[in-house]
Image (cartoon, rainbow, N blue to C red):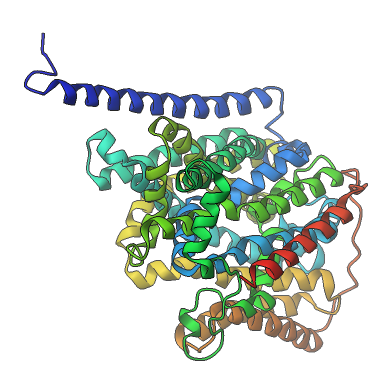
Length: 556
């Protein structure tokens, strides 16, 4: 019999055995949590009919507020936030918090204005509204842009960056004794396959339930990192630890940036404060009130009351989320000083390794993977929904049965998953300019689509022709201004300018090309539209809290 300890000192054998034990514990906690998520979601869906249009694409219109909030949180939060935003806060301070806390304001608008109207019309996709308001071609153009944005910017990039971050934190390649490149490949395939299985076989409801559990798991695991770090810094006292971190660099806690938004240096600024009043809120309103992968959970609500609960609960969570994706970066500056300024994305992985017990890493890997595959499978489900209902049924087979559409949705999800898994590893080999372009493509798509949808609701004089001309103008404007002319404006300011110009262009074009009959919003009768009685009070709380946060932390 081979003696694995032959020639190795006894204390080293003991350390190896202890290390192996902790890795076994980590693997056990990973499998336990991941298995529980899969079992619970499958059990919840055991009696659901997934062969109908509403059943597959909208979870049978049965989602409750808690499920909507958990799913929205995890659809939004991924490893790019955990690693990227903490890296940014380490380097630039808490100014990055604006991306999160202003989301609460957009979610208030979603709950009070957009959700009642979406549910009244009984929509399944956002492009469906554009056909009701404008015409079929406007619906098709926006549907194609949505699918293109999913395929080009979200699916492959979220897989690659997620795998890269898991590798950086947990060294999968070392654990499996393979090269780093192979470790990333393996992680991409595993996460992509699991995400695809959820999206393909369970539809929106499976995605929503797994998101909810993983979402609250992420809150627990994410909070553990700063809590354990602060306890270590404060010798067991959380508040003393926080005080030490603050005294080390109080200027980094200021949420108001004094960077230039216009003129020299504007293009390289992180987030000038004035962009909160221009393009940032337009972007936030689009993402939280119109983006298909987000709003599809709201469209799947059992009634308006639960939809509003889900949106406003998410607003509260978004105010608390900086404790997970901003505070660890500030703690990282306490630990590492300026030593990682050139590699800020290493801050979060190093902090996790420093403070998290090895036996807990299995649970942490599980929720990290859940965060990645949530964004991934949400995009798959939304892309399949848009293609099946807005493209296939409209142009290829108008009389397609619900079973046919569900089957097509599954095949669409499968093909997109294979495509994303296949090309994700090559994102790393793309030229730097192309990779940066892919990262910013969302800005190109979001603002034109947002302007058309907002015009559809708020400006009755805008015609279908005006909407299409505005959409085309918006697509070209950002590319020309930012990449061709390279104007000295922060890119978020360009978003704001583009939005205003889009609205003006749509009005001018509508005057020349005429207007259609006035749009009347018809109640589909599908859902109970009684609002949540605490919706306005909860909304006021979120707005006041956000303002107070800026007043307090803006004077640090």
